[in-house]
Amino acid sequence: MQRIGWFDAFRENGDPTWFGENRTPVLFDLQIFALSSIFITSFLAFLIILPGVRHYRIASTIAFVLSVTVGAIIIISIHHPSWHQGSIRIYSAYRAFTSDKLDAILGVRMGLKHLNVTLTSVPTSGTEQYSLNDLKYNERFEFLNVFSMEMELEKSLKKGLPYPILKIIEYLSVDRAGFIWGRQYRLTGHYTICLLW
Image (tube, rainbow, N blue to C red; front, top):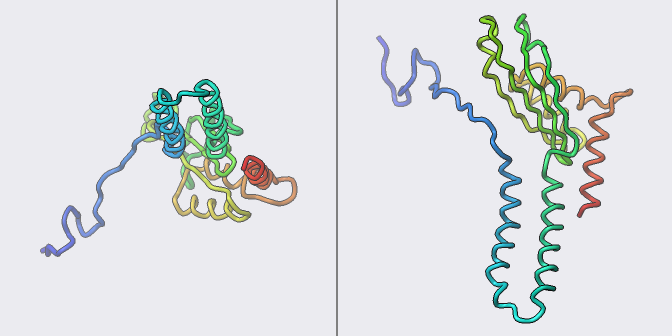
């Protein structure tokens, strides 16, 4: 006989509550949307007050539009993850201790302060890979300091991300011998941000 307690709603056999998966794809970057909406709002406010400007209307408009455009380009380019990007179709192991192979498109987008890795499976007609047909990962990894990539690798291992994503993070976190890509991207981003500000 099973007793019903205070926190036993929606549980089966004493297991934790399971609400199902929330698998919504990423449609746009909220940070970029927020930054661009700030500049668009200020531009619309200027257009509203523009009829009230009596003298130097054209000069004021040109100065304001150029200032807002340059500011928006600088701020969005600092936060946008598309300084260096690439994608490739892979056929790789999906996880440990299994023979499952994944046919997917792996995309990497490097920004000045972070890295965005996407892994999207390519639908196949085979029955053995049916569970991997609707696989969509979009992970963001910050590299703000020297040890951030190592910390991101540890978090990714604990999270249980697929092998292709782990390989990219592992490759960028190694900082010895000839494998210094992660350090070079981090230093390039740091110095570029300093120059843009």
